[in-house]
Amino acid sequence: MTGCRTNCARQTVGHAMTTYLQPDRDCQLCPRLVDFRRANQAKFPDFYNGPVRPFGPIDARLLVVGLAPGLKGANATGRPFTGDYAGDLLYDTLKKFGFAKGTYAKRPDDGLELIDCRITNAVKCVPPENKPTGPEANTCRPFLISEFGAMKNLSAILCLGQVAHQAMLRTFGLKLSSLKFGHGASHQMENGITLFDSYHCSRYNTQTYRLTPEMFENVFADIRAHLDR
Image (cartoon, rainbow, N blue to C red; front, top):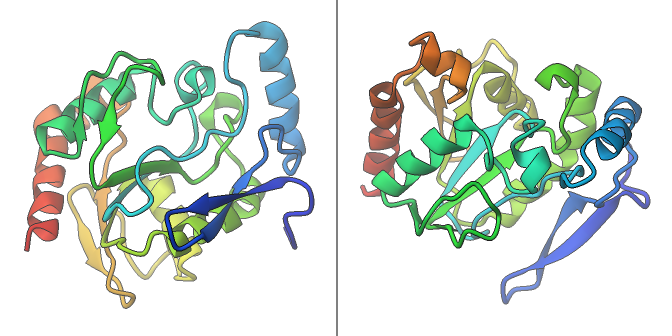
């Protein structure tokens, strides 16, 4: 992607009038994802069915990064990690560590508020079989880079899964071999941001005990300790 053409929306952030780029509601940049969106609009007309924008304050110090919206989760509701099991575990844990308040009721209008935390995805549109391609991730990357630039207080990034971890390394222009993914690992980057890794909070990972609630909470305990220094 060499430019945003007509497929980017520019938003105003805060009092400093800082702008960052996010895809249009009907972004056309990735043909395969557009075709999948059209099919879902016909099959699930009540779903949001569009690029899912970030959730949470732009001045947050913590950014949680997933891979892409889930078909019957964020793609249905229009809010990251909302409507499926991954959101149940994520938002419960965020509340436990003071990064959220209110009631999570799997709806974007449930009144849930994030505190010092923002949530986004490396790819904004739901992909077939939850597997975006490399070119699709590359096309979406300028939106993520622009968001980092707008988050002036950013101190910690939590990558949910290895693919999100790799997307972050590419976003920062780093080689994939430079920082190895590992659940519970943390990496201090030259820009002063600390990258934290966790297995994705999917139902599959928890049902197979690859990730337990305790393991997930341990990662957030490390993040909280980092931010409270």
